Image (tube, rainbow, N blue to C red; front, side, top):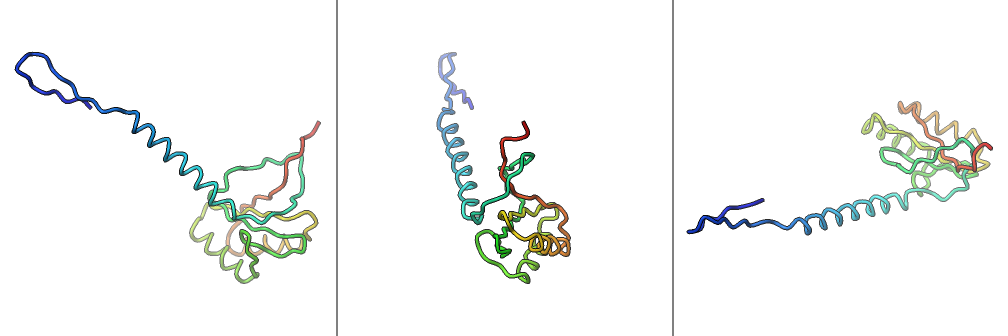
Length: 143
C-alpha cells in the first residue's frame, strides 16, 4: 500500500507497510491451528492392538469421521468412553443426520468377535450409514 504525499517540490514520498509482521502472524496462526487439530484428536481414540494387513492404507485425516472402537471382549467405545448399544444407535443416527457424507471408522482389536463388529455395522446400517473404514496397521507389504 503506497500513499503519495504532496510536497512543495516535485519529489514524492512513499509510505509503505512492512509485510514481515503479517507473514509472521500467518505462520503463527497456521502452527496454532495445526496443533489444535492434533490435540483435538489426541484423546479421541482407545488404545487397541489392531490387526495387521499388507494392503492397509492408513489415513492420517480423521475429519468428518465417527470413530467407534471395539475391544477384544466386544465392548463398544465412542472415542475412549464405553457406550451402550442404545446410545450408539442414537449417536449414529444423529451423525448421519448432521453429516450426510460422514464416514464411520471401525477400530476393532485383534481377536474381537466378528459378531460384535457385525452388530455395530447393523446399527450403522439402520442409521443410514453404509460407508465404513476398518482400521488396521500397515505391514511391510507384499514382497
